[in-house]
Length: 479
Ligand code: IDC
Image (cartoon, rainbow, N blue to C red; front, side, top):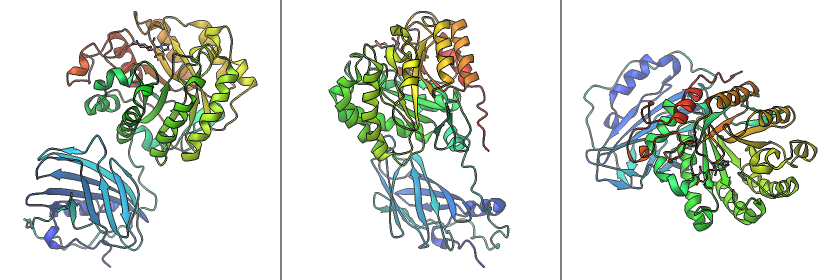
């Protein structure tokens, strides 16, 4: 039986097929190179198991530069379906599939390549598509294979019955998170800690968030989490709701592409009453949660630092915003800010008892705690530890410096804090992954106007400290 029918000779490049034979035990299907004389070259590679597969598709533009593209192809077998794609918007009608570029990967210069992919399902068999078109230009340039197609029989080893793990990124390992007890748990129901960085205000530092910097965050810093900090006031969201919503969506996509969790921060600060922004919050979260509903890596932080308001006001706000998110994305974890700049009330003379006695009436939620290590020390640490025995806590923002965002790194206090968070498996995001001219910024001023974000030469004292902490192995439980 021919388990994997070969693509027709006309469109076949042989190297991938040979590779498939050597990788037969993992049932890797042939890579198909549909070479266009002028338009495009597509490499399609799959990892397949009983009933499912992951496809990686590399698109090379051999024609004029394009700004926005759609890749079209047809599945050869009627039982093949795209289940969930990434780095493009996938649509399937019958066996015809289109993949449309996203805002950040739409520009393809002549000779440039981009990679997209999807998880699929199949019944019967799972042959590779033999023809692709980029913006309507069919990638069939009639390139003659330089080597004869293989005649060797397909692999005899049966495909494995369990899916491959799907990669080693934080999201690939942990999948959809949920709150269990006072912990944040992964898809195996085991407590985990996410460690990552917060952007600065997108209205001021968008130049710091690009492919190179986010690659550095995921591959050099080995971060699990990107907090996307969207100020509402101070020239933020309220001045351009559609524009800021787009920027947040793009950064969520960028985090997704790199297998990081994205924490969407509705960065209220002044005024401190979240109710001032209730209508904006509903509009924003309705749009963002609809856009990312099918993703498994998005966490929503509905108000950054309430201040000057009672816990009951914050709770009331949360109970109106959470249902808006849940209507689109029922299983997303939501984080609720606490009184006194998310200090559990401590900075306004209170403590966590008010939350324990009157928790937000919703499941799968956590509470935010913020600290600045040079300003907040033992009594704040004690209150967080006390609260964490009763409430699921998430340190969605902290600094190694004073609460102003400036001053010197307090290494001793920062170490005490992070040791506590590690011990309690409390997730955190550090303020900030930016080159702001203030002590809390990880990069030296001017870094974001250069091209280098990796290594330590571009880092401040805070950046060096945080990179060292974040880079240590995660040890996420997988069973
Ligand atoms: C600070 C920035 C600073 C900016 C200011 C504007 O570091 O560059 O001028 O906001 O309001 C917070 C807030 C966060 C603050 C940060 C440091 O969540 O917005 O950022 N901080 O002051 N809470 C405690 C400290």
